[in-house]
Amino acid sequence: MNDYKASLTKSVSSADGEFIGTRKDLESRTLYFPKELSWLAFNERVLQEAADSNNPVIERVRFLGIFSNNQDEFFKVRVADLRRFTMQEEKRSGTRAARKLLNEIQEKVRSLSSEFDQIYNQVMEELKKRKIFFVAEKDLTDKQSAWLRDHSVVAADLHSESAYLSDNDFKLEFR
Image 1 (tube, helix red, strand yellow):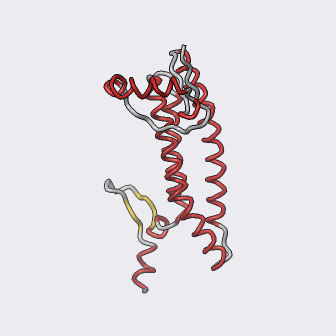
Image 2 (cartoon, helix red, strand yellow):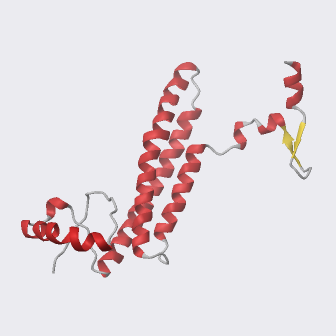
Image 3 (cartoon, one colour):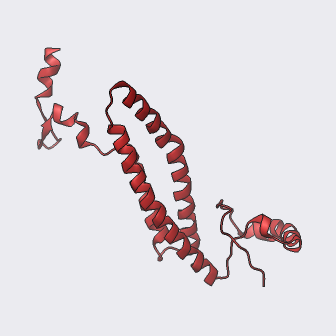
């Protein structure tokens, strides 16, 4: 045990000999960025690509889809685990470090969601200028549904790529 305590005060250097700190310093959790916030930072970068008007509009739609899928996964895995950990932490020790992290996550997610909504609306306007519209299947008339059934399998499948988007707020206009 004394060897371990002694090792904590030994200096740690980089490959080129530059002093980094002591082992105890490097074991401090305050030096590291929480993986949950890192995930959100990555997803923010995906959203920046969706916002970039230099990217083709279809790529911007794809980036919005990637962002959405990442957020879903984030909540299913990271946030769910963190909530369980928070409950256990508060029962065991009464500390609130995990609760603080959850609050930081909530603040960041609100900001990203607001940004997503703005970018989504911009991209939808850009698509509209190109006469590209989204519609929910339930909003199609019988005639439109029949036409899509007859023509999409043969013609569109050869020249299109499927993308999953939410059912909300999409309209298809036939002229």
